[in-house]
Length: 260
Image 1 (spheres, rainbow, N blue to C red):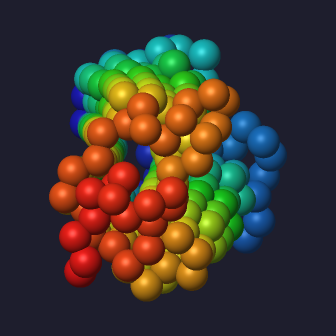
Image 2 (image 1 turned 180 degrees about the vertical axis):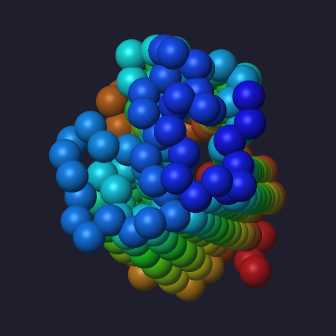
């Protein structure tokens, strides 16, 4: 199923299956949000392509799941800005692609909000969020790569309770907290990322078995690389190879730092 910007006001009568919620008008900017259930686009079916929309002024931009697990879809090349809640939120999705979107000025830019797996988040630009740029929560086995997350109030990218995820070749700069944070997410892979101008560059805790390799972290306000003893997981329970930074905790040696 394909949803594109060919029609300016789209409703489920001619685009969506019966088990799909009403589709809002995505080109007409709402003067104000309506209610907690109003979505710019609500995806409630498998194998849906949402492409090429400009969404603003709704409670949330694009929402998938909402009690109906979805799989095999694509959310690509959309512009989402000025929504009251998350720009893109998925719950209970599987084998999904979220790519080449621009999300600006939402509380969280892109959020996997529980029970997602094998979601590929790539080549998105997320800026000026009032919370995290990209946040994964209870969403194992996902890939976050080649995204730009800048000027967000909290973390650029946050992997929370999401084991076996990959964060690769992202740029996370000038965010209010961490560029990239890995919390209670064991056995992840964090490689080839750039973090700069954040409070801390890359932070890890409670995530034993995670591999950090070839990351560049420099010019952050606190530690460029920060591994903490969190929930009984000593920093030595992770793997560190050939990272580049000015500062690192508990030591440059532990992080196998090469001076940038």
